[in-house]
Amino acid sequence: MCSVVRAAFLCSHFSRKATSLFSPHLRKMVHYQTEPRGRANSPDYRIYFRSSDGTCISPFHDIPLYAADQQEGDVPPKKIKTNEILFNMVVEVPRWSNAKMEIATKEPLNPIKQDVKKGKLRYVANIFPHKGYIWNYGALPQTWEDPSHTDEDTKCCGDNDPIDVCEIGSKVCATGQVIQVKVLGILALIDEGETDWKVIAINIEDPDASSLNSIEDVRKIKPGHLEATVDWFKKYKVPDGKPENRFAFNGQFKDKDFAIEVIKATHIFWKALVMRKKMKGEEIICQNSSLCDSPFRCSDAEARAVLQAAAEYGEPLPVSSEVDKWHFVTK
Image (cartoon, rainbow, N blue to C red; front, side, top):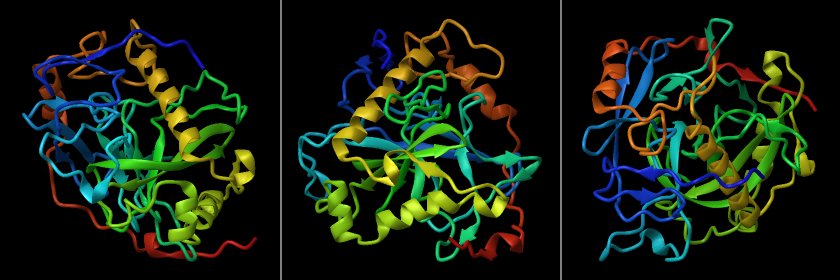
């Protein structure tokens, strides 16, 4: 892995005292607000983020990777172990939905938008028996799969995105929701020649959170779920005329410790990304509101101007009935 870069620091937008980004625990519980712009189911639809004090922020760069510690006197939810490392997850796609929503890494403040390909909004197909996405799908903030780094295990470079998360709890979350998750394991998808890690995690508010502590627990408590996950990722591009995806490690899930080491590595890559001196061409936008040492930190006024320039919020547009179509993929 690349060498550790110097620490960046989280500014007073989220805490009265600057906090080192190397620390896996923050002392202030943080809440976030979302602000939709444009019309859902249209190319101009965006979901922007604000901190609890109304500051416009980037969900990619300003939301900490590591979730805040419980405030003194609070009861840890669902009897989560006090030494458990918890992560923030930005939910992009609610379970059972089809719109391919994602953090817009190449737009100012990185709002969530629906992906567009060849001028058309992207929806994942319903591949029997899977309806849309079969988990709450999203990303860990402050992580980045570096496309210039060849992973020593997968022998492929990163996919230039934050690391993906499949949250396997029972609750259907909302796009833009920020939840705290416990990592259970990881799957190494090879997507068109790139490493595309898929972290398996559980919302700490889920009724099963205290019972799920490893990938083996998932096999016991949610039998068939991991197999369905591999099947989904293998086939989800087939209706678009593409071949089945493949995996490193023969499609086997790696354990929690392995997953956390991968996450830590992508966090280091992200630190190097936001500490660059300048951006080149079509690279990722690192504009942020809180990283004191980053050359891309912007003022409140500059961040507000991004939202003011976005399309006004309007009523959602109808979705084509084609999205509800079922596809059958033979082995």
